[in-house]
Image 1 (cartoon, rainbow, N blue to C red):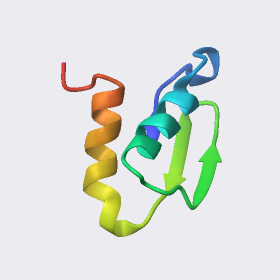
Image 2: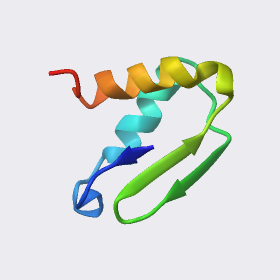
Image 3: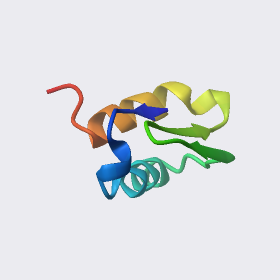
Length: 62
């Protein structure tokens, strides 16, 4: 999940997340969204890769 208050007002969050996962060939099985959260269901074997990919995409390590 990508979580943040005001995500609805920030365009491109979903696109950035989906593009990052796609570049790593991580198939999204299901998507759920709300005003503050974007969640994706993926295969368990990709969990660690998906987390690090999203951290990099949103520059959370900086």
